[in-house]
Structures are given as C-alpha cells and as structure tokens.
Image (cartoon, rainbow, N blue to C red):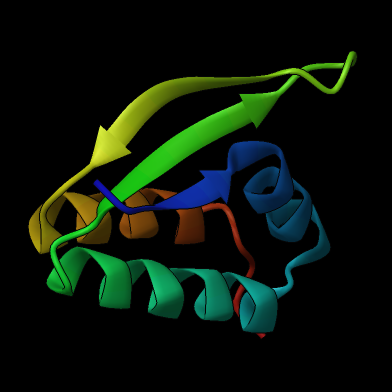
Length: 77
C-alpha cells in the first residue's frame, strides 16, 4: 500500500523555526495522501540515520488532530 512519510524530526525543526510555510506544505501533501487512500507514516530518524516508524495516520480526522497538536507549538506571526 502506498504511503506518505513524515519525518517527525523535520516537523520538530520547523516548529522551532516557526516555519509555517514548510509545515503547511507537508500537511497539504499528507492531506492529499489520506484523501487518496494512502497511509501517512510518522517516522523518526535517530543519530545513526536509522529510521523507525512509530505511528500511522489513515483518516482525515486523525491527520487534523496531529496537525492541531503540531501547530500549537508554532508562534503566531
């Protein structure tokens, strides 16, 4: 089954930088994937560059809940 991968480390970096544009881009792609029936995989990279998948999102409701949680740590402009 096709999937869209979100690297959570990247999300955290964009949160620290308050980079809404990059976050918006990731979530637009994720929304398209979920609506198209794909799974959105949440993946974390460790210091060795190895990746491990720790969660997946399959519904628009779950994606919106994750997105809301991400944006609560981003400062308003």
